[in-house]
Amino acid sequence: MSCKKIITITRQYGSGGHEIGKALAEKLGIGFYDKELISIAAKESGIAPELFAKADEKAANSLLYSLSSGLYTYGNGFSTGGMGDLPLNDKLYILQHKIIKQKAEKEYFVVVGRCADYILRQYDNVVRVFIYADIDSRVKRALARNEINPSRAKQAVQKADKNRANYYSFYSGQKWGSPENYDLCVNSTKLSTEQAVRIIEDYIDIIG
Image 1: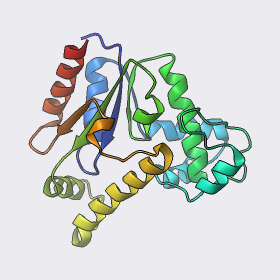
Image 2: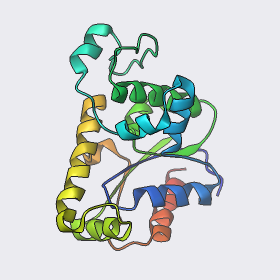
Image 3: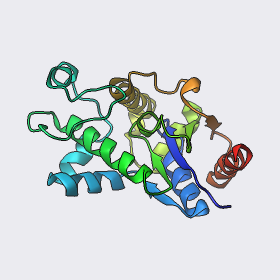
Image 4: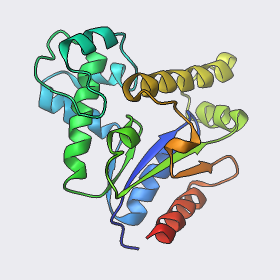
């Protein structure tokens, strides 16, 4: 299957969205970007990747500053100049925003998170996918990866989703997880990674 699409993956925590996105990119023979964007942003800015990793997909409390400085321009892109006083979260978002758009002009790829569906909303060749699953399966997956404290597993998963929702809402002005923001919503609860990939592939093939 020759893919001439950019696929954005928005995912609930523990739904397997990263694994699905990576497997999809490998199957389609196109690029894959998730944490890789942090390394690229760090290299461009000279900021330590460890600092960016802590700020990744977390909203800052800088909306009023961003508006007053002219950096926050819904739908019109961001200026990367004059970022000196901005919180690290905003610097990372602005850089990733620029990197995602630059790559969209040159290649096809799968990108996970980072408001990519919103950033690329004006591109005709973008397929926006939302991956979700029931809470029990998400907790089980997160526990298997030793990512959370077993005694507060459910709360940790829900908090991670809340952080993602806040991040998405802050930078896009839209509601995270709302079906109308996506082309395809996939419930991964009863699916293997390979089965989820097949569903997305079939959808891409159908729409042409």
